[in-house]
Picture: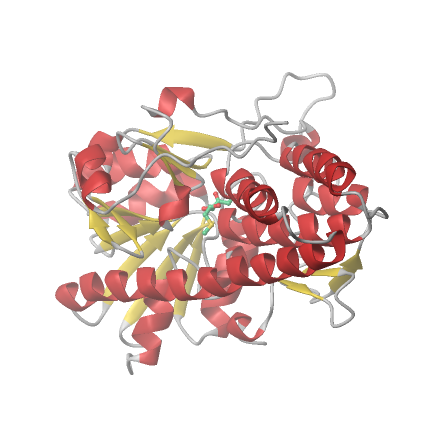
Amino acid sequence: MENALNLDTVLLAENKKDLIILDQTLLPNECKYLTMNRAEDIWEAIYSLRVRGAPAIGVAGGYGYYVLADQVETEDMDTFVAECTKIMEYLNSSRPTAVNLSWALNRMHGVLLAEKDGKTVAEMKVRLMQEADAIREEDIQISRNIGAYGFELLEKLGKGVGVMTHCNAGTLATAKYGTALAPIYIALENGWDGKQDLHVYCDETRPLLQGARLSAYEMQAAGVDTYVQCDNMASYTMKSGKIGIIFVGCDRVAANGDFANKIGTSGVAIIAKHYGIPFYVCAPSSTIDMTMESGDEIRIEQRKPEEVTEMWYAQRMAPEGVGVVNPAFDVTDHSLVTGIITEKGIATAPFKESFERMGIKPVEKFVDKK
Ligand code: MRU
């Protein structure tokens, strides 16, 4: 089994014209890369979770913006900017909850608007490619830093610790290392024995099974003692005393510390509070959206009913015509969060003040002021 750290989730092809993504819908059974350069294909890859996880879709958004901008055939900068605005809006419509997608697209567009004067369209295209590369490179360093802070918590708990996680916030969800699983990779780098010193419990994460398919694969392939549990078994495992800490990723954190993550996360947090288990959110600071006061403002993506009734089953298993609820994310109240681990340090309540001390500010929206 290939160690997932050796797999690139998103990258730019050598020809600098195509986006390459690892198709995560096929994992763990098949490791297949897709090459694409059409707007509809990039949109579909993000919507269908071929590339997924908040930081990874940010990286895909950055490269997607560049690949499509590079195809715009004009030497007129105003026309180029107008086409890039359309590209940004189109890609941004693929998934609404993870702020990283709009953050990365906005960052690309901001570079265009700030640097277009005095540059040709051809020069601007090169500059956009550099920015997309920078988003990817920074994500690797940010994930490592999150992992280092998380590892400090693991060291305090001591070797043999049980870690629970929900969904997949591992290396597959980022450019490398992940957020919630980064502390595990850093522990292994520091000589911890995956079989003796770490026990990772992965919620299967209905309906799209990112925990069973992706986190369990990553952890097992890295040589960690790994368990998959149905989502409704989390309370049982927590009560058993096997879990010392919970690490989850997130898609958007509001200024007050409320955060959206994969559906089911808030239930895990509520149970963790009941059993007194520390519950940490792992997030790059770009996931903190200081423009939103609380989680009530976060838009929750609603997805297709078939993901609940049919997908992953040999046969449809729910009655035809039944109503289906399929929110992709839920919001966890900040009162349930022990800390939010970012690349700048660990934020604690009151979160808004903690974020401000870290220098996290509302992101400026770049709009073409013509
Ligand atoms: O729908 P998904 O698979 O993109 O959801 C992913 C999650 O909820 C992750 O926990 C989150 O994006 C953080 S990834 C580092």
